[in-house]
Image 1 (tube, rainbow, N blue to C red):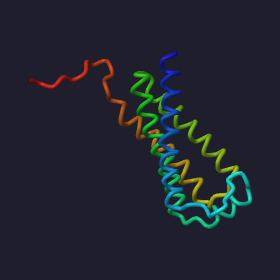
Image 2: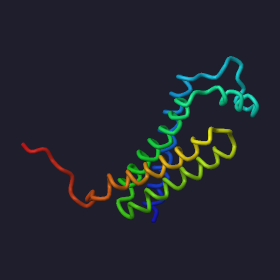
Image 3: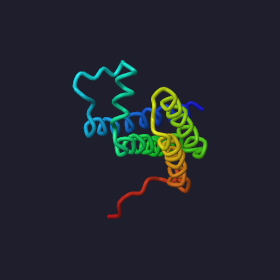
Image 4: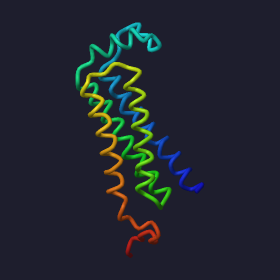
Length: 143
């Protein structure tokens, strides 16, 4: 029980770090205007209205990549109930994405693409780790 909880916690931290790194890259490619106040909702809304579609794809990629890497890492730590681990990380990321969608104005296509890629990333993570034998001894290089 503690192992799975710890694995989920580590997986979520990993997912968030990866997501923030990719979204940070997006901010480097599409920087906000000079004097931008991220605490002002009107400035955020005006800035987001000027962003091209490619900026939103960076956000989608960050959340999907974070979900994929976080889920795989959590599975390697949990070593059991892999579908539940991937599903939990994917579900939490979807909840966070929905929260983001309700707080900020995004193009209509963004929500569908964002949630779809998060769920696909969680499924792909499960497909990657499902046949992994976690009880097998580590491979040693042959002499």
